[in-house]
Image (cartoon, rainbow, N blue to C red; front, top):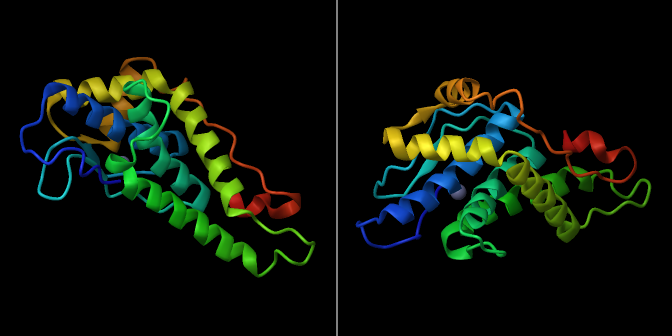
Length: 191
Ligand SMILES: [Zn+2]
């Protein structure tokens, strides 16, 4: 979940830092919603990226795609943009597409048995819709993590995030969006 190419300068304005904080918090809260652990979320600049969620645990294709998409969606919501800023998020979009391709590969061996053929475009749109719902319905949580990343100026571990959300009464109110549905009995592959 690398946030890169957002700016080329080492000088980051306070506003840019805020975009990065909302981007990374989008990934982090999505992971928290699904209980996928990560080592830390950071908005510190290094030579590779402007911020990142590190040590993210393995998850199924669908959840992995949604976590990838929640970063750019959260950033766009913060910036009041209707479209994703591709330049700052192409790696996340690539990650989501890779996850969807992985799912399609899994389905390939069985898809013809009942005539069902997964459509990549539809799957992507469905994942995007779930990610959008996740960001919109957990916006208070994303704001809380963002504000603390900016205020504390230190990395936050998975448990730091859980603690912050609990302290602010936001942990139990996290909302897990419905996952996209496949036709017939293929839902099991979207767990
Ligand atoms: Zn990202």
